[in-house]
Length: 132
Length: 132
Image 1 (cartoon, rainbow over the protein chains, first blue to last red):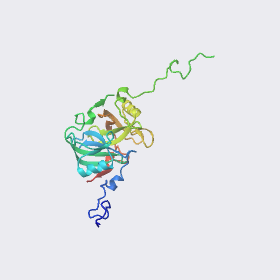
Image 2: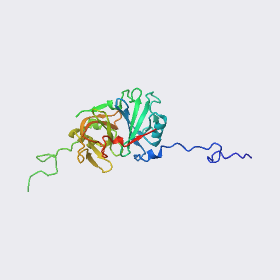
Image 3: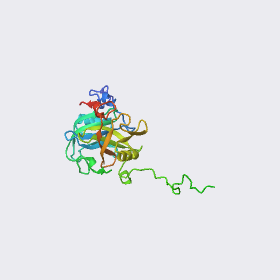
Image 4: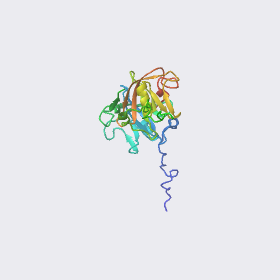
């Protein structure tokens, strides 16, 4: 009978299973989430300061964004993570993230490759201008 | 017995009661609201393009903003309308409103008097910068 440790006991095997990565607890403690665990992410082109879009992040999307250097969202409609540009090529390279005073919004500074909007415009806010 | 029309029949009296004002139906039809009837409003200083804050509006807050020329929000914590600057003096004069491609976010261009943030900073995003 083999004396090898049980494969699913992370504390015993020769290569212990690492804990899954989590968002920095100090940052996580700042966030005030919606009932479904999300914060609003306002995305701004770093040099022109144009507001490109608004997306949603949970803790894991923010962690992936910070660690990978490309902006990743939680898609509320598709219920999955969505790294901007993976299918379109319209990548958002991360420049910085700021948290607002009450922790329920992020300002994400990016360098946007191509159009930010799925409609092909640079910004998602070109669709409709309200006249008074 | 008096022949005066019933006071609460708006169609009969000499001064019919006006319908309460509503948001332009064409604009209202564009909006995709959260389950509690809100859209996210990103507020940007019109000339410097600094992102000042994020607030929330329902249809009535947007109507008041457009008609009054000063930005009005729905306060989720206090559950009331809140016209920015009424107590602080830090008024937001409306310059324009844009709706994003899927109708769940507004980009509100303003001329901000004084600090936008209740903490006294110009922007609400000066609280915490995330380092990677």
